[in-house]
Length: 276
Image (cartoon, helix red, strand yellow):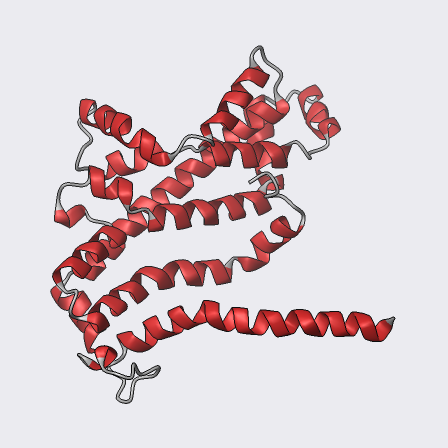
């Protein structure tokens, strides 16, 4: 019996190793190609590693194509969306999980129904709203529509439902207001889910391409995905330069994902995202 279990695990590892290599290969080649001299990535056979590594494409990105400005724009937009989204989603999740008010169930069903609406359908109404508010071409026009999400509200609601109701009732009996209970009890207890939701929100905002492309009209306001798309259009023959831009766009999120894994992995293992 013991030998059969070990064999099953070994079989699983044998499947995981090639799958992991296949998954990592595009990322590896992207970094490798970004370090190759100009034209080396398009030779045949395609080299996997650079024979003479160089950082000239990264230098060119930051000196000629103002990549630092686009990096700052992306940090501003993704950071603002993440902070605002965490506060608003947590407030809504607390209201649905801990408060009893008329129409609560219907509102919750409405929030869940929003999850079924494709994002592309909302682009035109959102654009008209932003234009009416005079926010087209501004960072506020990118940030404002993304400050709350149905998925974030649902995740916070599911997590806060697990809190012991006796703890909340005890705080109310001691005279604490709902805001004090939310800020001093609910938010600290929600830290694992807040980190997980914050990471998912930051990744989504960082990689978002369609909405910034629609709403931003000036090149100086472009975020990294929009700037990278323009770079591909202008420099499609410079594969190494485009790969360097892809590395600059990908690495911050990848590093953040690795640094925060000890927070979000326990949430995933507990099934906190099972409703996704």
